[in-house]
Amino acid sequence: MRNLILGLLVVVSTSLAQSNFNEEMKKFLASEEGQQQIATALQTFARREQERAIQGQLDEQFKNPVKVDVGNSPVVGAKDAKVTVVEFSDFECPYCKRGAATMEQVLKAYPNDVRVVFKHRPLGFHQNARPASKAAWAAHQQGKFSEMKKALFDGQQSLGTPNFYEEAAKKIGLDLAKFKKDMESKEADEAIKADEAQADSLGVQGTPGFFVNGVSIQGAQPFPEFKRVIDRWLTQGK
Image 1: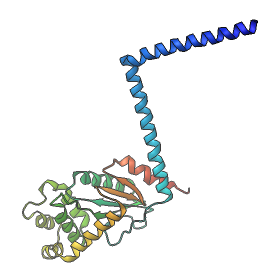
Image 2: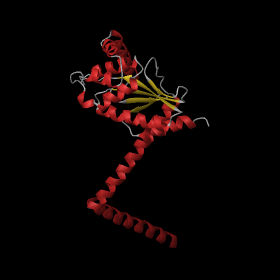
Image 3: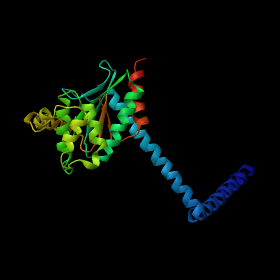
Image 4: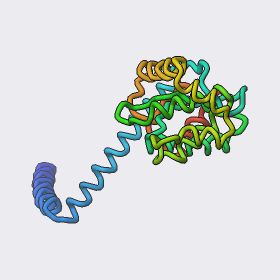
């Protein structure tokens, strides 16, 4: 009998506790403080799940990196670098200008371990992007791609103004006649179209787009994002 009474008391107290809990929870959910705490908790959970998903995608890419053919594209950095960053870029895109600055940071931080390959990805709605790419390609034929790349991004707001490309070519010491001929050549157009086709095949729609030893980084991400991937490649297997 004693055990039965104790059991009934436990059931009653549990029921009362549950009832009190439900009432308190309703009050909590109805309060501004409660709603704020719930919202914060949901945001934290969503962010954590997103980070897990991104990390999972990154792990998968390291297991199966994309092969990106360098071809005859301009290359800056150590020839025997352990890490190759392929950059798909548009000279009229402000985010690409930011991405180019980040690539300078990368090369400065990893002078012996990283090289950067440039690929043309002029977007259709940027009317000055394709002529700028042709100017960069023409400068590359005279070994002055990096200088022209800097001139184009530095003068991004002036792209398309009369004689801009010729003036830039003069400033970096190019043979102007050869530069103009190369810029308007069929070869320049074909080289840029080849880069565009490669970008399409790799799923690079917007700019800038990067591949770090075949691991994709999309958009003008800050230096730490590249550092994380580069360092992992450099330490992998050690």
